[in-house]
Length: 134
Image (cartoon, rainbow, N blue to C red; front, side, top):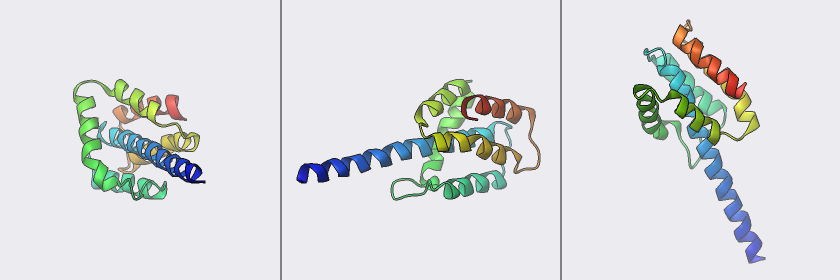
C-alpha cells in the first residue's frame, strides 16, 4: 500500500517537472518570436503572459513572471551568439506534449501579429516554427 502511494507521488512530481520544462520551452519560443524583429512591445509581452495563463502554464511550480528573466536571458544569448537553431532544437526536444506542440505555431503567430505587422525576420522564424510544430 505504501509503495503504491510513493509511486503515485513520484509519478505526479515527474509529470509536473515535465510540464514545467515544456512550459519553459514554450515561453522561450514565444519570447524568441518577440525579439526576432528587434522591437519589443508591451503588447507582445502581454500577449505572451495571456497565452501562458490561457494554456494553463501557471501553477504552484511555474510562473511566467518568475521564469521571464531567465528565459529572456537564454533567448537574447542565443540570438547574440547566432544560436537560434540550437535554441529551437532545445525547445523542440523539451516539448513532448502533442497538444502543446500543435498550439505553439498559432501562439507564435499571435505574438508576432499583436503589434499589427509581421516583419520579415518574424516571418522567417514563424516558418521554422511551422516546420517543427505545426
